[in-house]
Structures are given as C-alpha cells and as structure tokens.
Length: 348
Ligand code: BDP
Image 1: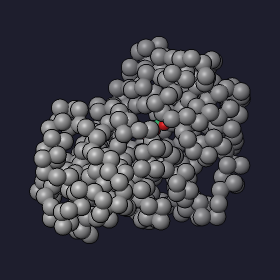
Image 2 (image 1 turned 120 degrees about the vertical axis):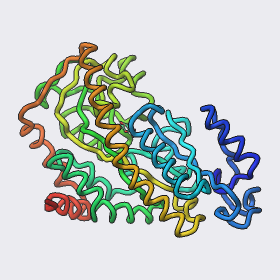
Image 3 (image 1 turned 45 degrees about the horizontal axis):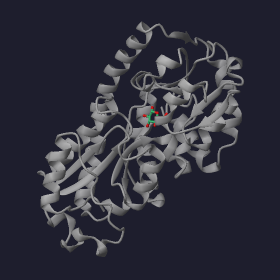
Image 4 (image 1 turned 180 degrees about the horizontal axis):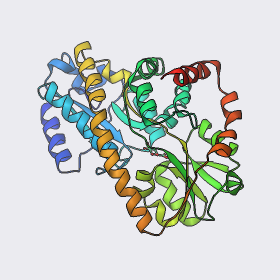
C-alpha cells in the first residue's frame, strides 16, 4: 500500500510536501505486502505513523473537501497522531471511477465520491439515488445516519470497500447551453452529460434527454466545445466548475439528491487493528455535521454568484410532471433495491 507505515523519512517528506500542497505520490509498489519495503515493519500500527491517502474530486476550498479535512483532523487527533490522512483534492489521484477501482484493490486507501458512481460497483446503492425519493433534507439524513444508511455501508464489504460515512449532496438540477427548460419535453434531444453510471443514463433517458456519460473533469470542455449540450448537478458544483459560464440555462427541477459517500479500501484498512478501524469509522461519521454546515454556506454563495452572473434560472413550482416520468425507472429496479426504497419511504 502507499500508505500504511511508509518509512519515517519518506513519511516526513510526504507530510512536508502535503503541507506545501505538492505531495508526491507514495511509491506505487506491487500489491503484495511481502514485496514492499514497508512490509519489513512488523505491523502498520506499531511501526510509527500510518499514512492514508484520500482521493477527492473537488478543489480544496469546496465544502465536501473541507469535510474530508475535518475527517482527517479528527482521525489524527483521536489517534494521537499515529494515523494521518493525506487529502489529495482536485482529482489529483484520478477521476472518480478510476479512483474507486483503485480503492477496491488497495491502491488508494480512502476516497470521497458520489453514490452514483459507486453504485456501478455496488448496485444496492441505487436505492439512495432514486429521483424524488426523499421528502426533504431531514428525511434523507434520517435515512443516511440511521439503520438503513449504516446497513448499506456495512454491505459494501462484499464489494471490497469499507463504507465509512456520508456527506451532504444538495439537489441536482439540469442545465444546458441551448434553451431554457421549463417542462420535461424541453429536454428532448438535448445531449446531457451524466455520471458514469448506468442508472443515471436511464434517468436522463426517462426525461427524454440523450445521456452522455463522462467523467466530471471533462464536462467543462464538453460544454464549451459543444460535444454535450448540458449536464446536471447541485449549486456548489455548477458554480465551482464554472459550468454556469458555458451552460447558462438552469432549471430547478431538483430531480435527485445523490449522497456523497466516504469509502475506505477493505484491502488497506484491513491491515489496521479493529480499534483503529473503529476510530476511523467514528471520525468519518463525526465529520458529517461539519461538512453539512460548510455545504449550507457554500450553497448560498454559489447561488448568489450564479444568479449575479446572469444565468437564466427556471424555477419549477409543480414537479408532478417530472416525477411522473420516473415511474418506469422505479419499476425497473431489482427486488433488493426496491426493498430499500420501501424502507426509505416508510421511515418517518
Ligand atoms: C458532484 C459530486 C461529485 C461527482 C460530480 C459529478 O460531488 O462526487 O463527481 O457531482 O457529477 O456533485 O460527476
């Protein structure tokens, strides 16, 4: 691994470089512990400081990244400095899909990603990204922090992950560079970028759009060159990526709240003691409220900036027609996903 128990000299250099914002990649050594130099140490926990790499798509000043830093801070504080999480923001370690694959086999220790992309690896998570599923934000958080959320995190073990926690995702809205979208029919024929997930492709199709899956980091260029007509995201992402500069029609249809998830690698966290794994788990959960507060503030700022830039914002008062189009998507879900949806709906 990168990761647990990097030798002290390298660890110091890594920490210094991280502090300077130019952390080098830890050695990409072979996967087998026996072949790695750090494997000479008796066990990661007893060999001094354990460094874990966390991959994040968003830039350092984004509220979700700030949540990652808070998670890292809590882990370092509670472990008395024995465990340090080094956050790599701005897709430095790759785009989400590639990062998740690496987390699965232990090449990256931790990541904060979207449930959408993760659902390609663990389909039960589709239940949490169903359109118009949550009654309100409070309902969503009751689901995520309660039994349903905890059970789903635990189920991720089967896919090679340690499900650690959730972050606030806001609501996703369509935006494009072609025309104002006031009713779903206005989306017809528009090439809309979606996350790299089968489910999101079906969602865009069900609204009449032409889905175009691509990594987040390629969307700005896609909009600018006209490879795609639009995309969908929450206020903070629409603003921080500057998509609003090249796709000026935003429709507040709020089709889905796709939770953000903090994932660990079963392969690499499995080398830590049970107590340390539990410490990491608790810290991830305890960072949630901090991230939510940061989110609320940034969401407000993003909306102000986007509106001030002259974006045409179409409010949708009655979402009935939008919701109705999602019925086939619900009908198509597996029994496993439908069972979770039922539990979510029943939760008061
Ligand atoms: C943002 C999520 C990020 C996703 C991105 C996307 O925070 O994890 O990568 O959307 O649309 O809201 O790909």
